[in-house]
Image (cartoon, rainbow, N blue to C red):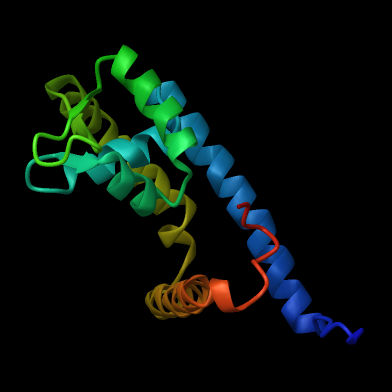
Length: 168
């Protein structure tokens, strides 16, 4: 049974297009900054940062894929590339042989320590310097609300049609 789309009103459209524009520009800018200053992509930096954020700097490949919200295949390619550069190591999980572990190497830790100051400054200049303290609070609340709604949609995905941007 066909339904009428719930079109965006002018203010919603303005907000959506602004988000599309700034998210694309921000992603490009952070990628350029990290490639120039550290020789890695923003996606690679994020992967390394996730590993550095856990006590033993080690996660199963499944845990890491879930944290990054990427497929296991895409993660395998990224980890292989970072492993060849010496930033990540991969080994069998001694507790569960079906799992593989990804761990941050000392070289990966060094890379993060070198790259983090420039990356944080780029984020500050691109995002937070453009906002008032009230807008930063609102930005956080908006991001949290959208993340919560998307996570709720993921949890009920089996009961509904898949989200159009998710691949199975």
